[in-house]
Image (cartoon, rainbow, N blue to C red; front, side, top):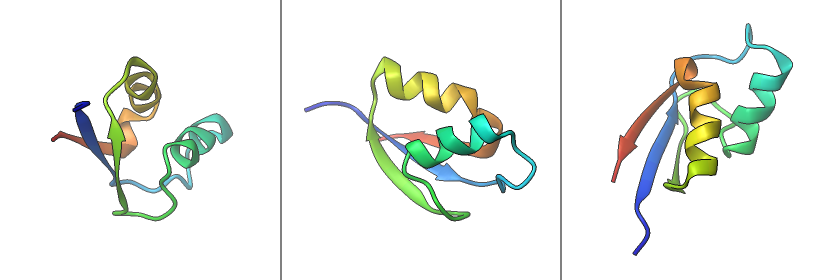
Length: 60
């Protein structure tokens, strides 16, 4: 089974740049404190690193 990560939006995207807002939306996050489980791949990790200051990441 593939490893998974749980990503939670912990800070608002109001002051973020438009690119950062698109990355957060692409991760499947729309509201504050919403969580999604994603496959732990290099693509996902790259997107998470772009907006790491807005997210909390847990390995499952």
